[in-house]
Image (cartoon, rainbow, N blue to C red):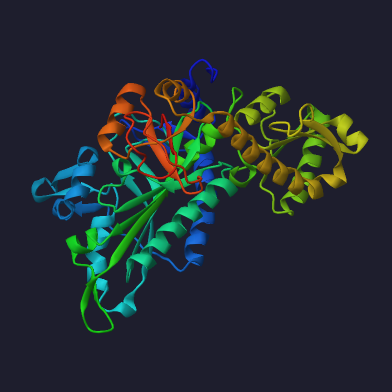
Length: 477
């Protein structure tokens, strides 16, 4: 593969195909998610779905085709999504009376049904979630990060008042941050978007932002407080306790297969993928070594060990059915595909009663490979995997902090965003954001929720800060 230092984009594009995560789809910008890549999504999906249901949400399924008129009811929403819409105008051999939009997001169609289903304050909160595919016509597609069609979940909820809706908005943000850190080992920063970066039609937008290994930012999940904007457009109202009709306050929030791209770019290296154990399709791969009779003996012992490891709840694969491939080839292949732990098992290992255990990256410098007694392997692996998961998170956090700095002058700002993140004061004006982007390609990524309160003047125009704290700027995917 192309080295990261030579061309990070080429490294990424080559890796996702070579590691058998995706293949390019037949339509420009689409992707075929291969079984290895889809298993990563399934692991993420299962964990997030459990959290969503535990918080009282119900899964539903809404149509992919949405009448164009639905989008026109909320002016800011249709304007924001207009360049990305894919529209169906002919069906059944006839031109349609009304064009149908391929779902880019579902606020409009779900808003229509919220209005039908909500009558009284007793119907609130209404907590819905949908696992679906969406279509957004991308001009510069990249697998997992920006594709014309991708997978995601989208939560849509309706509430009695702003306070309840904001609690929901922040719950979703906190949940996304936990999933990113605990599963993908991405140390994201959570906070609010600036007005210029808000979701079309939202009152407030919140985000989790991660730093990739080229210093760029990736928006990995968003949560939106929509106020009563969509309630007005779709007449989502309820009868309060006094019998008065009142508009509901709504939210929406989503996380997509983009998280897989973020995981790849946060941890990968020139040898290939580096998968966090909690999202690895195979947490452990056993490679038996030897030919003919010795190979058969090693394979039998590998299968026995594999069963013992599986009984510990570990996802394990025994690579014993490709005798035409050398052990060295298999070692390189599984390293490239990011398996956290590889176990090598040959004649000498078996005679010595040990297994050679190799971590994808050494947690301690120089200690990536060790020999462990065979009978001890199943019981020590959970600790090794947990240690590796924690190591990846800490390594990514250190990398981010080394590439992030407070800046106050324009020259320092332009130098910092060339390869990392700048924490700087900003006036809050969209026109100023646009000037910064035009000159540096950097945008305001997040107003960090946990940043200290500070006052200062805008790094670009010199006007007073609008946020009472520094904003993180960076180039982004």
